[in-house]
Length: 321
Image 1 (tube, one colour):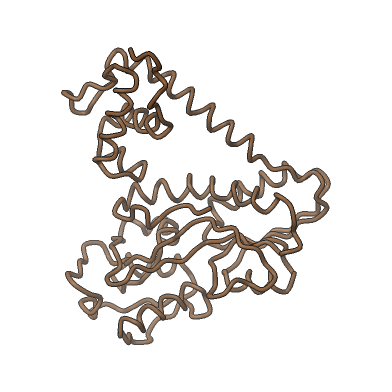
Image 2 (cartoon, one colour; image 1 turned 180 degrees about the vertical axis):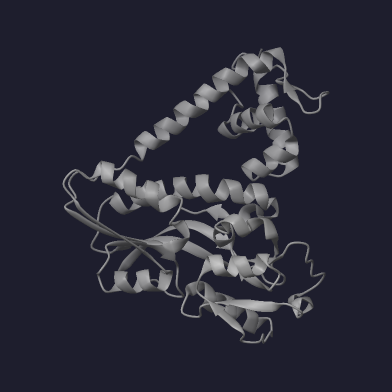
């Protein structure tokens, strides 16, 4: 055992070890943590060297903890939970002095993030008038600019709403969504046998996608223009057409997800940013506290399952700030 066993021990190493002990697979751990397979192996090697013992039996498939690994696993899991609890305590919301809060949240988060965010905010506000609105990004940004909202979580438009301070949350790259089994070999022109499902052009997504198509020199027939994510997902899954979407939107496909394949978007990589905007007269730590909580929820409900399904996204799909 080294004289200082904590030297070289890292939080990422502990996360890699606990994941490998659970999954028994380098590939599964790489997908779960958004790392490459060599990075997982290197983290595990560094941890074993720091402790001076082998923690995993690499001769087994799936891998299993060694006797020393089983002993250390319980301590590692406890340490990680304590660190996460400490982080939550440091970033806990303190809204006791707040008298009113008007919050807008993008529709993408309606089923997963928004309910928990609302509950956590309500718990932290003892004497506060709280108003919550969900809607498309362009509507929320306009209401924020008009001071009808204090804070809004939405896709960043081409220019930040006037009189606001941005707190970036997540980078959400554009991807290709096609019916199960469809595989364009080179470019989008190979999908000409299927209808292109456009987003509503009032939406930030719709405008960014049209700009991408214009730069690519693609003029697609104006047959469908839809503002409902679920309707677009249903049409892709049925084999009617294809679309350009993002991981956040695709992960909301629900019962239609099984009929959709997600593929990298050909050509230039493009993405949208989801941002928490606060009116610039909101001084103090509250906007960033809300942003920190939102990042935590986005990571749990979207980033982790998204990278598990689409590991090829890598760092393109990541929390910001």
